[in-house]
Length: 54
Image 1 (cartoon, rainbow, N blue to C red):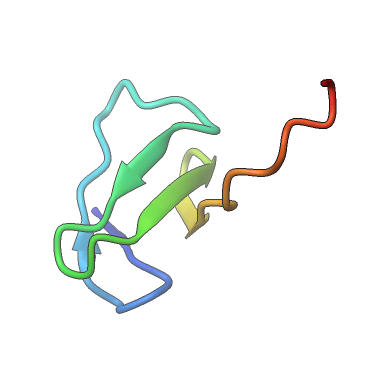
Image 2 (cartoon, rainbow, N blue to C red):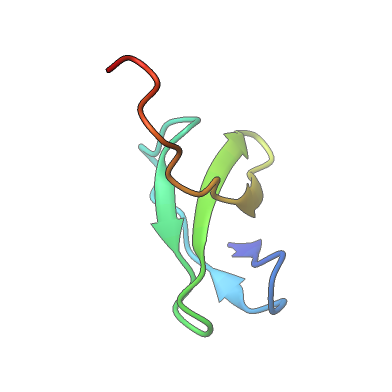
C-alpha cells in the first residue's frame, strides 16, 4: 500500500507493477506514475505533451 502524493489517500499497487506504470488514486482520481519499486514511490503523472515529431 502506498500513499497518494496529491491527497494522502491509500493507493494499492499490484505486486507485478512496473516502474513507469500509471495508476489512479481511488480517492481523488489523480493519475500517478510509479517512480520506484521496493518501496513503491508514487508521483503525479506528467501531463501529455505535444508530439514534437510532426
